[in-house]
Image (cartoon, rainbow, N blue to C red):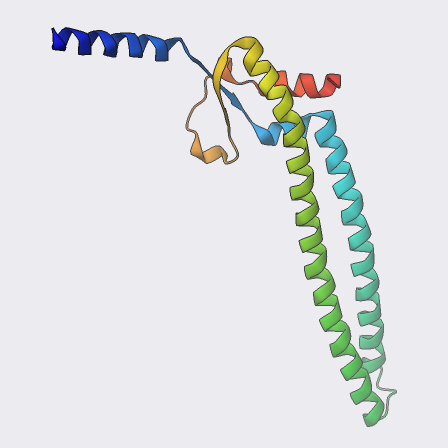
Length: 165
């Protein structure tokens, strides 16, 4: 009798699991293919261009000082002063590049988090509507070996985001 109850509960439990739907969403596609993701990428690109302009201006100053030094028209004292100035410019330039990279990465992370927060609302609505009990997001593509296209909800999420709902 105990054995029959155990077998029956295992069968019923297995049936319940088999009826649950599991979905999948690819955040990278949401970022790259949705309207809001493309807008965020444009904003990030503009910020990158602004940072790049500042870095190019710093590089111009460095090149100008290098040309003065290599011209051979400076006294030894002026040469040392220009070399010291050049070293300061190199240090500032390296700091500019490092800070630009940090700023861009921070902004990118903020934009991705914002987009995924918005996408999460659509995801929950679609999951409830279509009866999904679990939806996985694939942040690192190499973690998941295979996803059946029929459980990929990414297109539905993108469509929902693009519709503005």
